[in-house]
Amino acid sequence: MAVPARAYLSIGEVLNRLRGDFADITISKIRFLESEGLIEPQRTPSGYRKFTSSDLERLRYVLLAQRDQYLPLKVIKDNLDAIDRGLQPAAVGGVPRPNIGLATIDGEMAPSAFGEVSEMRLSREELLKNSGLAEEHLVELEGYGLIAPRGRHYDGDALAIAKAVTEMGGFGIEARHLRSFKSAADREIGLIEQVITPLTRQKSAESKARAEEVQKEIASLSIRLHSALVRGGLNRLR
Image 1 (cartoon, helix red, strand yellow):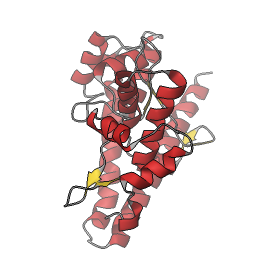
Image 2: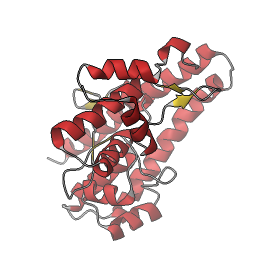
Image 3: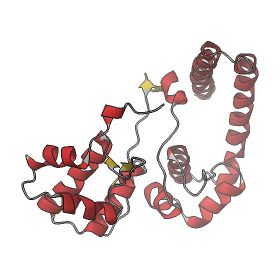
């Protein structure tokens, strides 16, 4: 969807909005930060810069980091890259940390959680560091199809799986034991796909929205059913 024309700010308007907090800001400095790759405003056909509110907030972040934390531009750029990938900037000598939050109802995942596409993008090193998983174990999980990168990065779902596998490893459970989880998940996905396919084949926006809602609801119900079955089975062992 196109951004309305007045959603954009000129470089002069950006300058005026920043001057209240940063008295020494100049157009030359804004252009310099752009040349360093810290901001990337769009351009009009005639070459004028068009700044969005996101560009403005990004500039504020850069200027605050310089003024209050005395961070060099390289570190600021790395921090911005982490933020762009849905991570918290790294502490000195560390790696960026993820922001993870799952919508839950009484300990179960809410339907809305199944409609969210993870925007988190982790490098292989970041996945290993934040999950506690060893490289050889990640290779094994990838071989079993339990974890797979999306393009060149791993998303929040991959991290959640890696962390769960790491914790289960403390009980002597190995990746090879978890293949049944993948098989069960694939069967559940197949069942949901059967239910929503008639809706997805229809071209209307209403049908597409309905398909998304049905997918969320059935996924949430399947987790509740799985939890109840496991809980019931364990109770019978007592």
